[in-house]
Length: 252
Image (cartoon, rainbow, N blue to C red):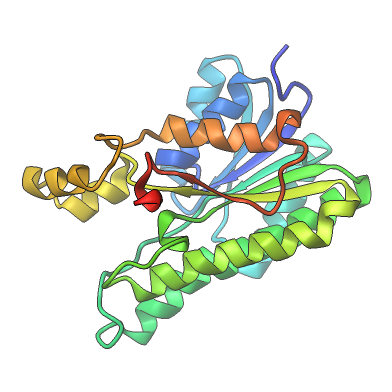
């Protein structure tokens, strides 16, 4: 029997990368999984991969920056599977890189709407289902940019720091009511986001690797493993934490 047998897990941003790896990991441990994203094609592919492995999953399209869509996502999850035990609020965007003085209002608003407001909206509706049952685990996806600063990414850094703040506030609100709230802070993980950051340049990638104490990029599966641990009973004493999954980056 898997660790999450008879449990229901919701994963936003599940069309690729860390979200897809986490959805697959939950399913492999017996969870029924709801995959959500604005990318319907990618989300349906994640579901197909789960079903190919004899898992149970469905896709629900939602833009996490829209309150009505998030409310419908969580409500439909509970309607489909009868409960919600675990949530990985992973949907996010890096937006356009620009210094603080050059960052446009449109860019700032979009990044914050998805990365920060989106996490808050998901937590708001997820907790509304978890708290009455007195059980559940929420993991938010922050970043090493939620723990340290990066130049030319003011909106992204601010949004990811905000996710850590939401996580800590939510943890204190729910700790005596049977629900735990944590965050993972991925470092340089080999995903489409990193591909966009390097622009396909081997030299730029080399510079990234030189900054990695562990000497390599992480994988989506390694982040997924941390998410599943935090959602599991093995982490029953852990709440309010922002766990760096970064090969030592922020310890430098």
